[in-house]
Length: 454
Image (cartoon, rainbow, N blue to C red):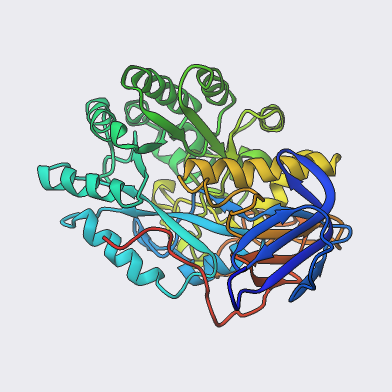
């Protein structure tokens, strides 16, 4: 153990490691896990009694939007507020986005994001990159970024007006040039031609439920089909974000047998259905892809392992901004939902009748799998010697309390939802960061940016 490094032992917990649960101890030296197993050695500097709790690797939310402008509105959550509620709920690493803006280089966009996040994040942080111009200097920059730890590229098959749409030719070019350099490609899959071909009467555009017709299931399914075929030809490593339809999910699962493709879904697609859009305030639940029907079958797919992991697509808007539209065309509504604080609570629900299985699935689908896809699986996502000591001590039998998705003045995505999960302790790289579901040092954000400056 390094001189001056704290020696921590977590005792008597139900430790989730290597796909199984066993009552044992976790020994931490400094910022790393030292050993898993019964501990009877020298006295520790700190002993945490985890009796009655699961001991899990820190969670990773692979898909979060923070401190950015989307359309007309600025997001409600900063890196500070978003990372605060994340860490309070066991999320020790968040993956956000840097999108190249009009007239801006991707390098400049990364620099601005680092300025916003530096010294402000309570949990560890990395970014996915969305380039929007592809002149020769852009390719050179992207290749440099991939070599310096930026491993994931986010692309969209829709949103032409926003300037982030990529057609099949562009996707093929990006896959062929950047795939061999180690890039993994995140894809928002909705076919823009299908969406552009839908024409609704003006009166229908005033109703939130029309969002499901403007962005129908077939748009997602077709985009996924075309993407999988292109990736098979080019050998690209794919990750399909926020899958909302059973058909698309099933196609990706089949493709996983022969391609390097993973997928995620989000709690809103598990536990909310399109009925929420029929409410008087249904516009508050607009997101893309839209909320769908048939959620029981979709949950069955999720519980059976169809999705490699779960994320939030956290995209919180202030209540006043969500309500700022003309009441004539729902396409002007701020598009996105909050979710960071809800993630573990609503994923646990899938297997709540079998707590041990729920804990094992959480360790796999909220920790190990997203860490590996983010390119940090050699240091995060598992309770293994040498890994970062990002550790969650989770009490599954705490008192029921309301699920809270965001600490900002944002619309609550899951009103009336409750959870018994209590985060008794959370350690970030061996440092006690949360006790009793509250930050231990709220004024001292200790998260690290996991990628180097460019």
